[in-house]
Image 1: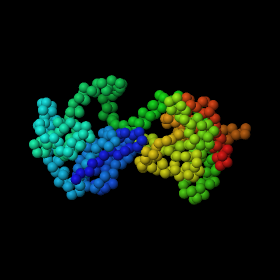
Image 2: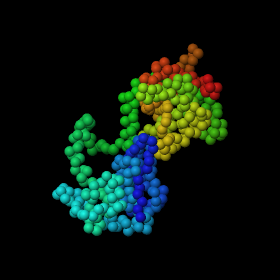
Image 3: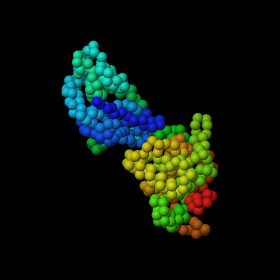
Image 4: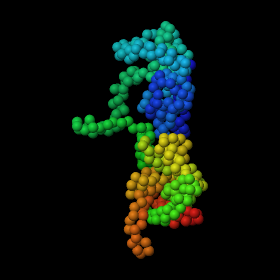
Length: 418
């Protein structure tokens, strides 16, 4: 008995994924719930576990293929029948390998049969949109069996490849041709297909630029008060709460306080309506080796600095380990991006649509500033607020950033809710 491996439900609004890599090969023994294949969606990377123990009998989708929800990925044969099932499936392979060549030579490459496909084969044919007439049957009188359909799914389809030259010019028209490469340079280039996550990042960022009336305002903050407070209590804080006291907790609380005063920065446009959020779900941009992801700290307005630090730490670890779920990525109302960890002194962050605001943090750098008529050296940080001018007026944007600055330069305001 065989068990099908299918694409699971990927989450709200996600209908397709790209095959990342297979952890097993055809013929390998697999255990129930053992990770079999990695799927990349436009938001997260997930692993599909084996639905049953046995032997991987066939793989129906290869790395780089795009698959829909519930599409067939492969088949697992029962442990006792795995070897026996694999042998008959492999036996007719040479004959089937000649099918594409026959197609090129004549219009009737497959011997006709009056017998209908086996029920299990018919089910696979219907689910995968195949044509039974293009599948060579290995059963009695040429009947198409389940193994024949699986082999057709695994084997590259020649008929699909044939029309490609004709379709290529039509698809290529919108794209500008790549500039010619010098002969000596071509050998030193590497062409790599963009991951689905990278494609989505590119599309969403460009959509944000095309849709929103985006503008950025800047300010700078004296980080000395926060740094002094952190140095005084970081050991006690970590001992009590089990998490290090960083800067993100302070920034998140400062943002929450400012959002309460300037609700437009926490709003979004829906058609002709403005939706004001009575809650603050803060997205925290995290850089990973696969690209930028933005997990969400939910109800940050109801959390303490310690709770925020713990949640950011947990989400950051999950992001780096590739363990973020769809729920971790959805519903953000405002985003904080910390380019300072990479040494950025100033930037203009792009909105995370449909949000109307994103705060950019930057490198803390000692600079001469005037305090009370005296020139002193202080650890300063530039802050950048990019906002959607369709919702947020300039006065509101500047006021929001000033409130964040005031909270950080007098952190007792965060405790006293001032």
